[in-house]
Length: 320
Image (cartoon, rainbow, N blue to C red; front, side, top):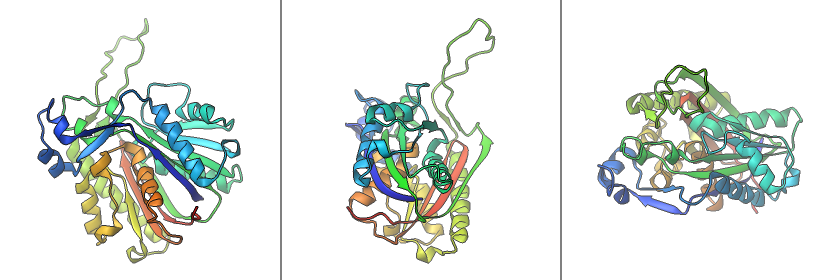
């Protein structure tokens, strides 16, 4: 697998910490100290498909690939207004592709799960070009009166186009069932036969347990993929980490004794955009000219489930 194009799209509405303090009991200082977040983009009059389509088109333009050349579209998505059809199918219809398209839900780890699936399809000779999209609107599932959750998230979409290559040096995806730590139950339609309570509501999160699980799984996964790729931390150009919380990122940086410039961040600007956070960061690095052929990237993410994943990628995208 080799990434040959990146793209992203954010909602127009930008909400600062000070703006949140107007309607919930919080402050800019309180949020920054605990998360590193200063602002986030949230949905207003846009739809998630608008963002996903724009991100997809940007990635295809960067790759120089037409929609008719795509063999698969994989969309990582946690929740949106449509249960069916899939977000991948909706995007495919708008961009004019007729290839197989499906969604996957591995929460914030979804982008790396999608990379793993794409790699398998490419190795099997089932595809030449695959579009991977991560489109997320977590602002729609939180309680906007609960400062412990609503301040953390932002909306956005990002995409990559991948093709055959030897850039994916190693990858590890895993899941450990524990729905009590972080979950959201979607309301379903009533039937004449359901006799139990619906028991739905906004996103529930045990912050301390998420922090512990995030750190332990990230360190474990990252060391595994480094060893599997037969490289050391001295070979790593960038650690491209899930942008959930600056404290978690700093803990990982300290453990691997990485320099500040090896750990790019955008959590301060966008908050936690779920599975879109890593491809958003990749797109920024790519478009800012910070990625060079041969750079070694370690990607790592964790999410509800509890899911986790990491991979080592050697950057081999041609300059446009």
